[in-house]
Image 1 (cartoon, rainbow, N blue to C red):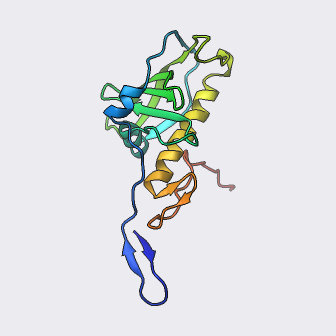
Image 2 (cartoon, rainbow, N blue to C red):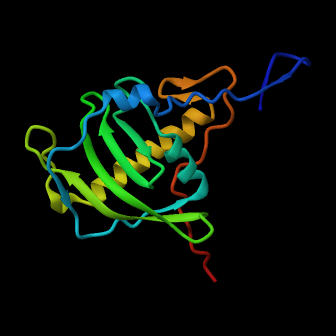
Image 3 (cartoon, rainbow, N blue to C red):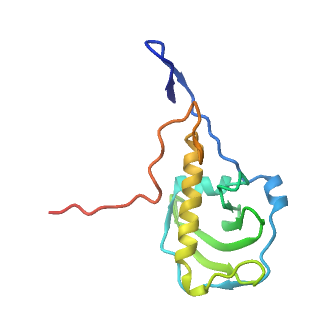
Length: 171
């Protein structure tokens, strides 16, 4: 909820979830990869249950400010596409722990067709991790009512960046 109004008449307004979800219409606009190559290094990110839910809902097409489209399907396969071409660039398996509260990413594959993506494989999985972090943070901001151009009138507070940075306490 956010508070709107001036003076003594504040009104609680529900935060508007602005996420452009990955829908059947999004799926119709994306293209499968042509030449995926496996990466032998495992990404180091751990997904919490909130992030897993956001990725299952996905991020559909918005505008040129949002450069990636993402979806975690029912088989727990995570795919990322470039938003302006619809070309699939990444694919990975999301492996849930027993209670489904956390997950790791395994089996990262990267598009290597020269007409679609020309990243060097030694840049992976670091580049994949930066893309996924950016995408998840877009989803979190949209859910709180914030677009790349600023908050909506019913926006809640801007969410903390994901992943949370853990700090050590000095003894």
